[in-house]
Length: 204
Image 1 (cartoon, helix red, strand yellow):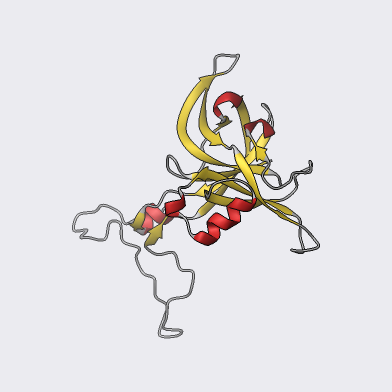
Image 2 (tube, one colour):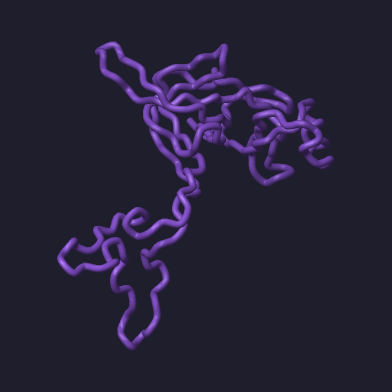
């Protein structure tokens, strides 16, 4: 699937032709530079490696500087490989937000917001205990989790408290509402994972 690397700007809403208020997300999509071309002869598969968001030489390694110098560009903060580009692109080519058109549907993937260590009510949607007279500190507790004397252990995969969020999430079939080419902005319907200024990948 061909696509671009972007940065989540934030959420807003727009009105359609019928006056309906539509929640949407604004993404800075590109411009991305082709930093490496994968071929079947050398790598065993075909893909394009794209780089996004400039980084200073001071903040990058010598190896990274040499890698990006081959493409004639400065070091990039985010590098992702994409497959399925129909057109032939070569090293150093730039791909802008005009790769997308209004009305088409895209998949957006990113890392969800980290929410820290959470209990079972927030993390898994447990109901918790009932509020009755004499009920002590078990309102949001998970309850009984152990088995009998056999197997006398907790099974793997048991829904318990733990770290929540910070996982890769892909939201599919988001409609492209607007393409602002002069500002490299892409407006898609609905929400996408991640906090503001988080990196996302947009795929056709």
